[in-house]
Picture (cartoon, rainbow, N blue to C red):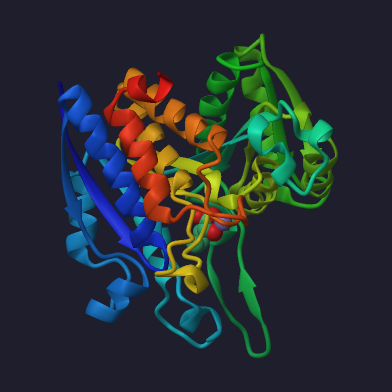
Length: 358
Ligand code: IPM
Ligand code: MN
């Protein structure tokens, strides 16, 4: 029995709704296994700007530093997206949080669920069995380089240090050794100097992992391969912006962006969040899929060393998909609400699946 302190940042749009369901599942885990989860709910994103003028108030950052892990819903609001002149933006809060906590590796698993094969716009035989893990660098590159305006233009610099590449490359290689021993570096080394550094570093590290076959793809080709033949991928390693883009693309394989969780880790801190955004059009309608956030909780439990607990949450999600307990983007006729899907999964966890299987 363990006690863990979790900072919860519900954020904007559907963030609070999906967090509520993920917390139900955490509570079910706590009931069943006797762990104590101390939740510390804080503002981040547009809601924090509205309340304090700052997307990442000092008190939120402090709570994150003090927590064993962070659960994030989603952030963002169209009133900032459509205003290029806005000086303060919700996204700045998230980026500052990632940077302040040193969350340099963003890990995004993508699997094709058999029961959802027909929901993907891609042909079932192309995606059946696809199972990949994307390692996206999260605190460097063009997101964090110097940016600004010139007299009649603008610039965003992309920079990487050797060490920034080395540390995530080791994580990706290690992970490949526990999977199918394949690592694909996605870059644009035919054009970008930073990409050539990525290749150089990966080539230098590769001999330390003799079981891992390394493959190199330019990002444009990788984007095409992701749709043509996603089964070829095991672990993908890539820089910040390429990882942002190809992970949204990869979600099409799963059938819905609402299914994909992620973990962001550094030397000490760890944050767990769905890969989807704040989906403001869906706010308050009960149509948001809570599964990405619930699977993010499963990744958090794994991070805590609670493997049995994490496996039970994943089993509950599989059961839910099997039983067609789905939100409208996956089930147009008689869809279930965000709350119903969350409750179904939480019940399964609480019962340990037993009464469900009988
Ligand atoms: C993500 C998001 C963020 C990113 C935005 C909200 C800044 O798209 O986590 O993938 O680009 O990293
Ligand atoms: Mn993104």
